[in-house]
Image (cartoon, one colour):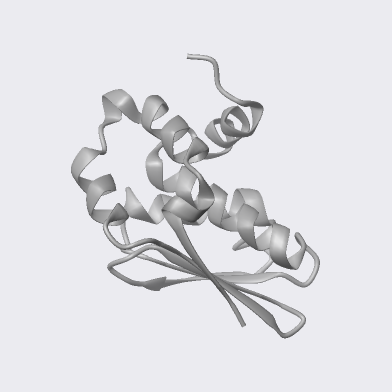
Length: 134
């Protein structure tokens, strides 16, 4: 299956594709679009403390430029994946709409991870995410 370059690069960065790393990629991209990438951006990623949900952190790092090494990202435990971004006093919270986490966990499959990653990469943003600014 031919991948868009963004997903191919994410796959190289993370080591494989999966739904949660793809969701994280999209979360960081939303923040970058709304707040600007890299300089001054920080993130708090909430997730279960183990894979596969924890993979959301790599997706956020990849697309937002917030990294553990720079100290501008941290991880907090949560049953639901979400990311909170801040830059120059402006904030954005990105979370899955109700029902999506359950669907992801129910349908996730190692054998179909490429197909599923493409699906979540291409799904309309407003259908998958709740985005709150403040």
